[in-house]
Image (cartoon, rainbow, N blue to C red; front, side, top):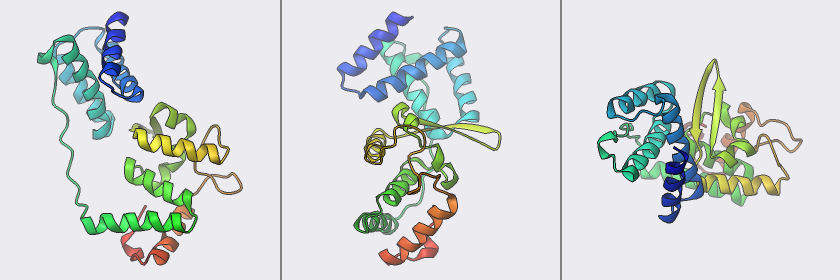
Length: 214
């Protein structure tokens, strides 16, 4: 029902959700409605959740579930809400976190803004180094990147703060569409080049190179 979605969107904005978050929530609700044919009951939601889990990364599934759960709460249907997936806790000791910060700071001190942003993007999204070319101006504006590799397709949600930072960088580089991370000659930044630049940065930042992998 378009009227319900419009009211839902207005409610999200009234509660100061960002425009991007509101759009993602609406997208999730529309996706569920298309899949279910407009029917709403908890068994269907659980089946949809299972199908999403088989197709997308856990963080993406949880983002979509957050959207429909918020809609169910808005509609007064708490019985339809489902639990988010439990994400595996990652061991990331504070010492390692500080070394990551050191690498990013050193890159910027050396004027290597592109490398600093590549590292921040990999860390913020969990993408693989070979997926960096999927970070495009269009993806940043949508708030998500659709990665198609080896016959598989997955959607990666891009944090709003990262999108703003990368769009500003693209504007400074006069990149209006397509890939954000390019060489000085306008070519694709390769996996090998990213690895090489990170290893050189390790030496400059006095961080053990054998501990650092894109």
